[in-house]
Length: 540
Image (tube, rainbow, N blue to C red; front, top):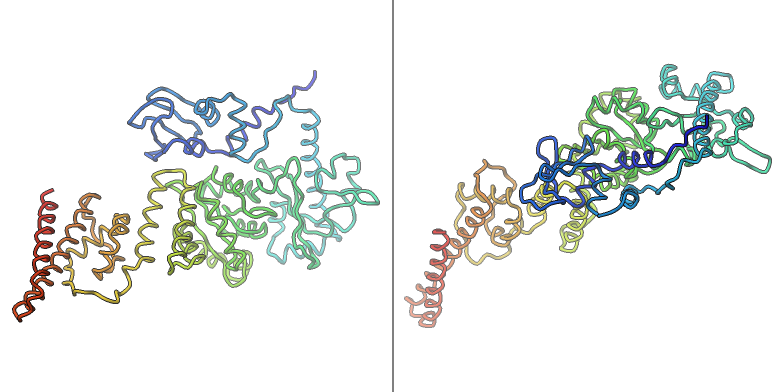
C-alpha cells in the first residue's frame, strides 16, 4: 500500500495558530476590553452599540452573541477582509513572519529528509554521550563536573563529548544528510565533523526530539560556544533552549525566567528555578517571546548587569510590549558585578539568586528608566524625544484599556518629574495666601487621578507651591467636577490678585496720585467681570 502524502495545509495552519494569538489578530481591528476570562468589543460583522463580540485567547476563538459569528484567526481574517482561504493565511503568514508553503501534497522526499535529520541527530547525541564516559572524554567530563553537573544531571540533559577525530563523519558515512544536519561539513579531503573536542549540549524541539547541538570549547579558544546552523528541523530564531524541560516549571511557577546562555538556563533549572529558559545562539526575538506567551505571559528577564546586558534588556522590553495583557507580570532582573546566574548559584547559592529574581524591576519602571537614561529630560528637546519613545512603545499594546492605563501612568509621571511646576519661580508678582489642607488634598487627588488636567493647567498649578507626589483618599470626583474645581480655584486666586492690586492703587490715590484713577476703574471692571464668571461656574 502506497504511503499517504501529508498535505501542508493542516501543518501550516497549526503553525499559524501556534504563532499568532486570536487576541493579537482580532485586536488589530477591534478595540477590546477584558471582562472576566474573555475580551469584549463591538462586533465588526454587524452594527451594534453594546459590545457582544467575545474573544477567548486560551481557546483561540471569537464568538458574537449578537449575530452568531464564530471562528478562529483564519475565519476572522477571511470574513473581515473578504478574502479566500489562501489569501487569509498569506496575510496571517506575513503577520507571523512565516514563509508560505506550496499547497501541494508534501513531497515524500522532504518528509524522508526531515525524518532522517531527526534520526541522525538522535544517533549523534547517543554517540556523544557514550564518548563522554570514555578516556577520550575525560577532560570534558571533568569540566562538566567542575561546573557542578552530577552524573544524573548529565544523563537528564544528555551532555556529551565530540572527540577531536571525525567520529560522526566516519561512523555515519552512509547517511546522505550529514551536511544538512549541520553535524558535518565537506572540505577538500571529504567530510569532517563540525564539532570537535567540544562539550556537547543537545538542543531539543518542543516535542523533546534532538534537532541540533551547542558545543563548548575546552581549551579556552574562542568562540566559547558554536551552534548548529539552521536546518530544515532547527531554526535558532524560533527555538527556546530548555523549554521542553521547563514547561511544567512554567506552569507551576506561573512565569518563565529568560537568561542569556544555555549553561545558565540548565543551572537555574537544577537549583530551584525549573521555569528558566534561554535564547540560543542569537539575540532574543519576537518568535521566542510569542512561543513563551503561549504558555504564560508572566516573564522575568534576567540579564548580566553590564552594558551588553542592559542593551539586551532594552530590546526585550520593546519586543514584549505587543504581548502584554492586563494579567501580565513582566519584570527585569540584573546580575551585577560581572557575574552570571551560574556563578551566583555556585558561589553564593540559591538564596542569593532568588533575591535577584525577587528584586526584579517591573516593566513600567524599567521602561520609564529607559526614557530617562536615554534622553536629556531636563531640556524641551530631550523631553520630546523621551515622550516619543514612550508613546511608540505604548502603541504596541493591543489591549485598548491597558494601553489607556499605561498612557495615564506615564502622563502622571511626566507631569510630576519633568515639568516646571516643581521648580521655584524666579519672580512672583503677588504673594498668594497659603493653600489649606482640604484644597491641597483635593488638588493632589485631581493631579494623580487626571494627569491630562494637570497638563492642561500646568502653569497655574505651578504657582501654588504644592507637592503633588503624595497620595490621598479617593474623593470620588469625575473629570468634569475636577476641572470645575481647578477653574473655580484659578478664578478665586485671580480675583484675590485683582483686589490686592486695587488696594495698592487706592492707597496711591489717597496719597494724592490722580494718575491711577483710570487703572482703578479698569481693575474694578475686571473684578466685576471675573466675579460674574465665578458665580456662573458655581451655579452650573
